[in-house]
Amino acid sequence: MRALKLTGPGTMELVEVPVPEIADHEVLVKVTAAGLCHSDLHILHQDENWPFFGTTLGHETAGLVDSVGAAVTGLVPGEAVLVRALWACGECRPCRLGADNACAVTGTRTMFPLTPGLGADGGMADFIKVDARHLEKIGELDPLVAAPLADAGLTPMHNVNSVLPYLTEGATVVVIGIGGLGHVALQILAAAAPEARVIAVDTDDAKLDLARSRGASLVLKPGPDAAARILAEAGEHGVDAVLDFVGVQPTIDLAMSVVRPEGAIRIVGLGEGHAQINADLSGEPLPWGVTVQRAYGGNIADQRAVIDLANRGLVTIESTAYPLAEAQRAFDDLAAGRVAGRAVLVP
Image (cartoon, rainbow, N blue to C red; front, side):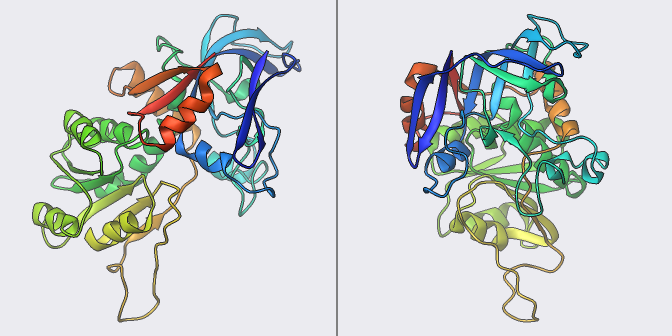
């Protein structure tokens, strides 16, 4: 079979490898689609100290069950499934508390839990082997388009869920970056917090048009007057929540300049920006009481919730399909900002 391997800093190669052999508790999945996101670009450009060279890329995977191990029940060949992007143990204290995205066994205090494409072979291949407990049935969803739900659905679902207590009647939420995750966040907000006013920020006119079609009441480009326009819309006290799917310094600065006291900022994008918090009475860039959170992915409940929304037609993924053999073109288009929504590799 073919597999897209990370071979070195900035290099990847589509190579022939044996079809994986599965153990009793595992399932062999025939991949139908593998999503590509900006975190894959970050992985591709790690330096020579990166420990996962030789791994098959891809943490957003959907497919059909090909075969099951002797101990697997409840899954049959031909069934459509989504491969979870976080392979938690399911038994440690965080997992038992529903925080499997902070698993203490497959992750550490400073390292995220095991993720396909990061430490385990991912889904940019013809087949992937998966422990049966890391699979979710996707019902009537088309497995050719469902793959991004493993991250582009999961991550905004988790972040929206974390700010829902702030989005009471009359609330305003700002979504920065209407890309693969941001356009899904808009749909989740429309379903989960329909009373909230949504302001969308992006540099690209086409993405702002997409935001309008997904329910944003105001769309604008970042710039020197962006904060003033947001505050004019929401009120000088500030907005209730900001979801930053970019994470560069200007977007984090914008979030900090418009959030209200006791509001919420969620930093999702890996843009290498910094949110400074000062422990003094003057010069503090944040209002009192603001919660700033950077979460990794989401938990099982988040995953199942966004699959449910997708099955109900409340969440759809804008995607562009590329043959697996043209993975380099997909990576290049994503890096250049030419992809609307999500790029998906199809074996």
